[in-house]
Image (tube, rainbow over all chains, first blue to last red; front, side):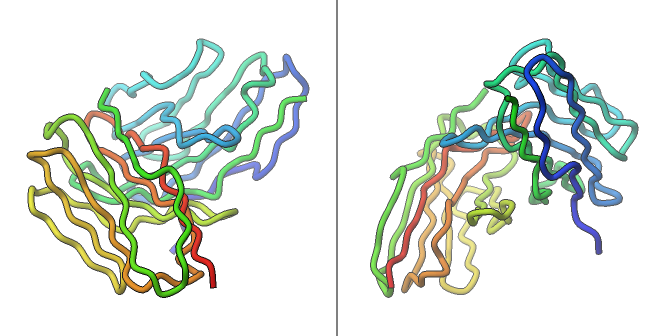
Amino acid sequence: GAGVSQSPSNKVTEKGKDVELRCDPISGHTALYWYRQRLGQGLEFLIYFQGNSAPDKSGLPSDRFSAERTGESVSTLTIQRTQQEDSAVYLCASSPSRDAAPLHFGNGTRLTVT
Amino acid sequence: ILNVEQSPQSLHVQEGDSTNFTCSFPSSNFYALHWYRWETAKSPKALFVMTLNGDEKKKGRISATLNTKEGYSYLYIKGSQPEDSATYLCALDSNDMRFGAGTRLTVKP
């Protein structure tokens, strides 16, 4: 079946512009996570959605970052007024439930802020 | 927020060597401990999910153990092959899913 799909795969933007990253999870997966990996660093947790519960936004680095998810479908991560330090690979992952289910990752969006 | 520590940061071994690395965490208050394999230019892929103290999982030459009382998990690779070269990540599933920084394994032919 189809895996987690992310778009675009690459995005180059100018400093100060807004960008929107999209994640289509596997159908039926109630949990959805956003992470980012900056150059030379590990996976940094950003935000977590579980069904219709309020999202866990504790990892968002600033108020320029926001994310939405409608029900158990597509999620968008928006970065406003991008800065060069926002350059990273943004990864989305989904899983079917909280019960010790593994995450399924998308291929990521590589964001470059010039 | 539970901090997940992985060691070593990187590891170079010869083909055929067996190796292991560690994931440590401060608490037993979590749902599960995950291991992922992340190859360059690909997305992370799940290896194991463990929930109970004393859990042992095995997939081919790779196995993992979990000790929740002392707060660590080991990942073992028997007879390393060049295709095992990757970054191995562990993650703690508590109120969210936090990853360690990973162990980068390089297997030389």
